[in-house]
Length: 298
Image 1 (spheres, rainbow, N blue to C red):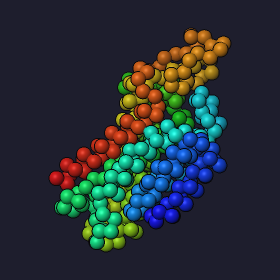
Image 2: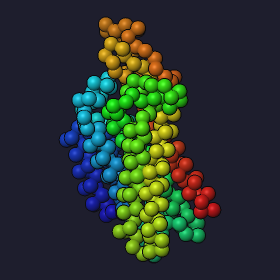
Image 3: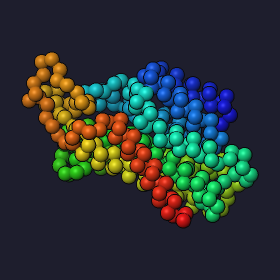
Image 4: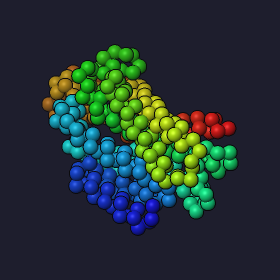
């Protein structure tokens, strides 16, 4: 994307985030930085994936917001994501996009196709799949969190398979898992569609390549969500407020008038917070995608 167009696009998205209350001021600044680096990449697949993740996640956060407010003590209207939240969901992807930009010549003729036998083609493919893996995890986990909490059936803890309150870290449900798969599939479809129209010179096995990207996106979305749930169930402490019937935020202290007996420990130990879980799970999913792709191409 042309630098001037990239500057305009990320400015509009940052402004949109503040206006719609999906981003705080610090979150908007972080989103601008992530967007500027990503949108400036000559290959548009990086920018399109980021835009779809941001817009779909922001929209789903607002879906049935009143119901979510009843279940989550720290719920904020629109999401109002901070810089920490933006970077935990965007830092790995931004690094991968920058690494691709730094190593793969943008003016290479003909441009690289996925697969191939040269080291540069392999590197190109590995980074595209790693980037997909990162955002498939982020999108799948966000869709699972925002839609799974609305399931009519209580979730089960991924480690014990016992029912837990809605909003519990590490809680999964069939509806939530389906949402994570669909969120990852969306990233795969976006990648396949973008490359279909931009990599017009890559005519070999076009259909099989598109199907592979769609399938990889779905698998990575589900895998990333499961990794996130496993980390949340074990290394993130979940506490249920029996008085308000809500899950409390990470590392929260007693409020005035509250009793210790009001707070019930559900699962996990207080090692990671939600942002750290998101960062680690998306990083692991990106690394897994890169490793599997490397093994396949070797």
